[in-house]
Amino acid sequence: MNAADQKEIDSVLRVEDAAGKQLAFNDDAPGENTLNSRIDFACEKDGTYRIIATSLNDNATGNYTVLIKMAE
Image (cartoon, rainbow, N blue to C red; front, side, top):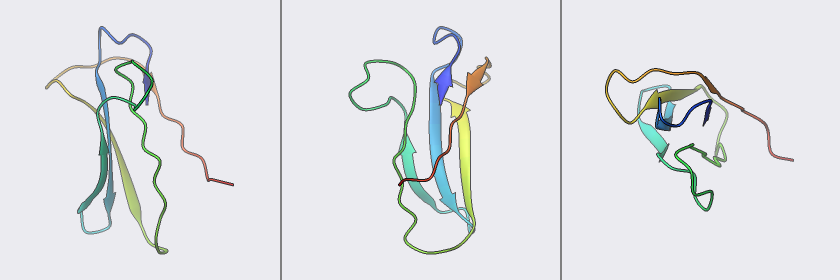
C-alpha cells in the first residue's frame, strides 16, 4: 500500500481469514524507510482472505494504491 502523500496517510495493511482472524499486519514496509506498507503473505490453504487497507491514525484519509499479486 503506497500513499500518494505520506504526510496525509500513514498506511497500514492487514490480512484476515474468513472468520476475521488477523493473519498478517504491517505498518511500515521493512527496509524501505517509508510510511508505506507491505505484506508478503503465503496462503497456506485455499479459502477466503480479506485485505484491510487503512491508516495508522484515526480518521486520516488520502489517496493510495494497493497492489496485490501472486508470487511466481
